[in-house]
Length: 195
Image (spheres, rainbow, N blue to C red):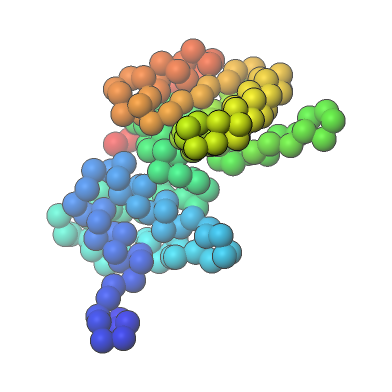
């Protein structure tokens, strides 16, 4: 395909080409990002386009990993941390969670959680530092308010569930750390990882 004077590949083909040469979790981050709904309401590609691009690469080194990542990819992961978390959850043999699950409670409380395991009553939240107002040096009052609001949200969600787990980037890169957090929250492994 052409873009002005340049020949370019589609977003789906580019994501698959990347998946041919990077580890599985990085391939999933790339594909989830390509599927994610943008602020303007559009998406860069579709799941069908990813799967078709992966199929075209069958037999090329890395194509099995690319096809697996295309199958695993979702538009519901809202950040790279959520994408890598999904991979780590699967690799550890935990049940597949529901993503972006809405919760409601008394006094008009509404929240959407990153991960929800209804069979265990466990909520999971994968949070980067930007959620808490960025730098406390640049806006200490804003950072303080963000932390208080999130703590209040978490307290309500804990009352609406049997278990609550929160993790950040360091917890998904350290072997076994996310598994420990999820087990402590009451989640149990139920199957072996297929990868």
